Length: 352
Image (cartoon, rainbow, N blue to C red):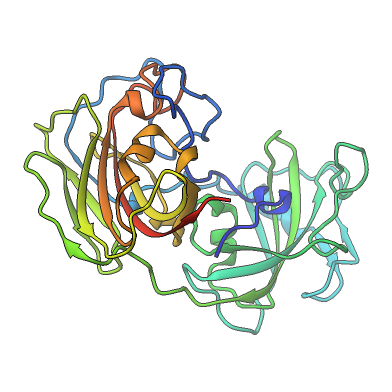
């Protein structure tokens, strides 16, 4: 299942996956806009040197949760009235304006009577949003009302419940059922309060996890060690005496039986990314699904390290800064840092 990245869905995302596109040519320039800030503290300028040693696991690679609602926030969202039946576009959303909240405030109007939403399962929902300032639908750059997911030509949105990129939705929808209607109010990106009416219209159970499958490979001594959970998610242990390499390290851990992938492929992979002190900065395992990407549009360490590996393989990459996001810590949140990845190559196809 892939996220549909329309404006409606993006509105709910507090943080998203690290975009691996960066210093593909290995220079020091970095790309300050290549990825959002990692969920872990991987800041650049003025950061203390990272000391090796630690344990890195996907469960810790979570986006920071949304701010909690105050008592006043909850009173405000309780005042929102929504006309119309759940499962249909609201005919009116009314409240005394301006409505302002500091945290994420939730009012469950209907818990729904369909299938219960499952952690890791796909949730399909409609979103109708209005401004807390004047109660009117959001406007586009042309000054016209932005269409909601209910409008002609639009479609409902979907995400995996528990995906840390969508913390604004996770807590409000946990424990609810298909057919639920929830009002959620929070401060938008520019600090203005947004009021959203969310209708859950469908859900699917969590899919069985996909993972690397093949023959185990004995890694070289001195590298971080990897243990796998029952679902295949890795935990990486970095020793305190680990020495950061000056060149890219490519260590297969599982050899698959598929074809060798090339630099021209689009690859779908599960991965965990760690700093050498064990701090996780991104993980597809935390989002419950592997990530597709063109091998020509990722950091050099991925392009060089994964090309030639077989589909079904699991590979550890230890990527020096020169082949990741450059050596300048001011140019990128991960600049100047050696990065450790464990990558499960799930599938590959020729890029379009």
